[in-house]
Image (tube, rainbow, N blue to C red; front, side, top):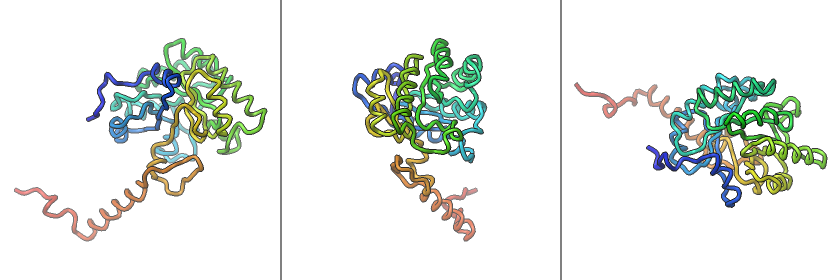
Length: 273
């Protein structure tokens, strides 16, 4: 049971107003009900049901194979549980890029079928028409610049974006264009800290960083990464707050050994007549 009440639910207005109030915004990914129950008992402000579920939950090498049905399925699992944090869902690859009509239809699914309170799209000026249409339809939109995983092939891999004067100017221009189109916040991923700071200062809406330094208005991270599920994944921007990979592996190994040794289940775990 959550220690928070539904009346304390975080709203999109509170996310936007946090910037002016100087309050940092904590964000984290979640993909299922089990972890949603735990997050509900924390003070996290915003939960993103990210298309990173392709890597984390579905075993893909990148986010490109993730479908709308995948996103609706996992988002619904999270929103069935969460009451306090604001929930945003990723729009997956090619679910919004083709046309405004496509973007409206698919974003509508995430809100109507899956219970999301907002959607996130990757890209700059090229997706501004979609952003504007979604906002006009009453769907809050989060932007995403820098390393945009859905463009991993075009970018030549997972590398820092915005280095150099020209690239930095393009990113600043895209950020301002997205703000004008109506986004309520902007994810900056793997962006030099100084550039992320300049963008943060230039925008009226909050920036949410991941690998973008401490000057962003908030931070987001993949839940399974900070919990240490993958002991070999150690990018520069990641701080691990636990080593659950070892905890889970040790627990399952001990269970396996006890079953094979006949020590589990014991009388303690058996029913009497």
